[in-house]
Length: 405
Ligand SMILES: [Zn+2]
View 1 (tube, helix red, strand yellow):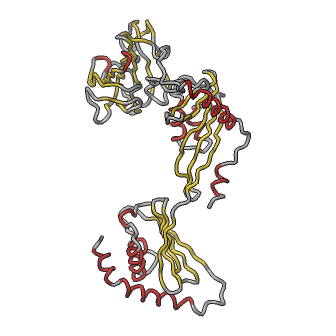
View 2 (cartoon, rainbow, N blue to C red):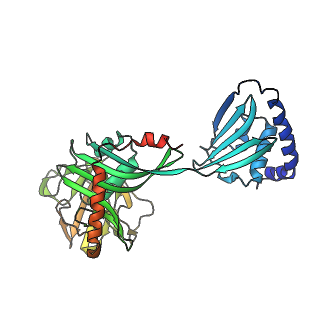
View 3 (cartoon, rainbow, N blue to C red):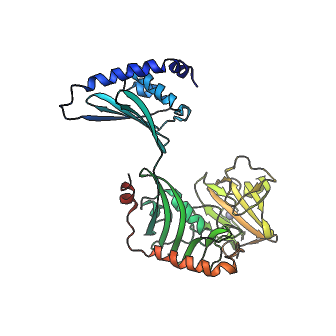
């Protein structure tokens, strides 16, 4: 508790009494006039306190009274953060209410009841809505989904589910279509976050892929394809989310710097310097450092005798060291142009049993399928979910959200 609040506590009742008189008087005698209600909202900035914000709109004596009643009501001053808002409500030029919106989720009211200020707290009205977003790829999937007014988070979640099936770097084409049926939460009609992605589909030249979220009665949850096979594999398809391949795996390639023909035992992903590079699977870092033409290199050993190499990195991820265990998708470094390289790109290699193999051709084992005993249950769920993708007109989330204030 601050010293100011301690002082305030000692004169709490006096201030309340003063305050009551102060605010009660002017409202009399104005009964005849039409009520004029004026609201003013101030947003808390860095370095400000509730007191300094209130002082911008009301007199200091009233500010202190407000802080005092809030303090008595257990208002969490320490959680006041930049971005919180304070709205003062005046009726006939008399302050009647202060509304404090804390962290989007909680609303505090300080109101004048008869002659006394009182405090009320409103817990947020959280609502979850199911939405369908569907569209056609034009340029990249990322841009096409953002054009539908969704946030990058939804694109990443969608890409993550299909990450083992589709390489969105190389496999997307203009005209491909995508569908995703998911839950969105709103707090008092303001969008908060995406929840479950329930069912999705990606249809294009690469194939027609479905992803169904399913949790069996034992609590095992995953995304499955139509057959009930897990969409997850032990390795991801790509160490970068969005870029393109400039040089493929080949037994003989003309080297742009060495000016000789020699095998290229990996893939080159062109991406801007600094683009995050992640490990394509769980594993252990077995090399981190400078290695000749590779420049800055990370080497990771995975299960089933797989090994991956990530070369030409501009920098390593913070805290990465030889011997560190990394998770699938974990950041390991950043795209660069170190070593024998003509421009920023990631040189990526996949080895199986010590031999470099083509990452685009390899068949990686899947995570477990739906258990046989639950297959019928899964198919029932699948058939009911698939209908959501074909619903012609799901109410737009905007109208729905506005309807629940
Ligand atoms: Zn290369």
